[in-house]
Image (cartoon, rainbow over the protein chains, first blue to last red):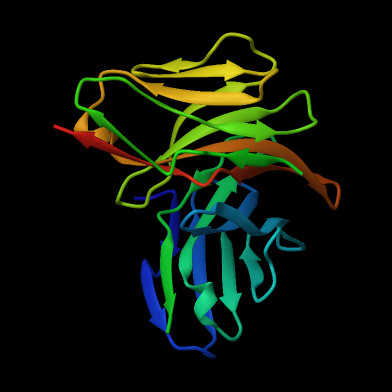
Length: 112
Length: 120
């Protein structure tokens, strides 16, 4: 089983819909991250969190919100999806500032 | 802010040959980490190799090695004896440290990616 699990794997939604992407981990890591991947841009940081009380904005947080429901769960929400949020979304975890990031297998989101 | 640039959108190599992927970065920090990640069609992000900036010796992992030029801020990946399974998108990444709320995080800044095709 994967240590970092993202659901759903793929999702198609319509403009204006609310959608939630979920991430859960069994690695016991405290730090969790959401990244977005676009062609020609690489991966960019959306939000990051240390625990349920600690949520921080990354470089492209506009239009997104997150919830750290538990130490092992970190969800990304699009309150009103728009087509330019079509992308591949990754959740990642780490155990410390010098520890490597461990990625989930990504959620491909298409907004029509 | 740190930036990472991969100037080769696509590269190709013949099976069993050697290929080098380029990466440059910009930073004012003296101590940092650099990484190469591989992303096959399965979308999984796989860590290929890492380099600590304070180490002068270039990192090596089996057929993968880096040429780390700290003064030039260059970090290229060499793949020797290329195999069909090496075909993927490769990302160069720089790790900086974020501090928020008294906690430190490792933040990765990625390059644009290079698509590597391996021809049989």
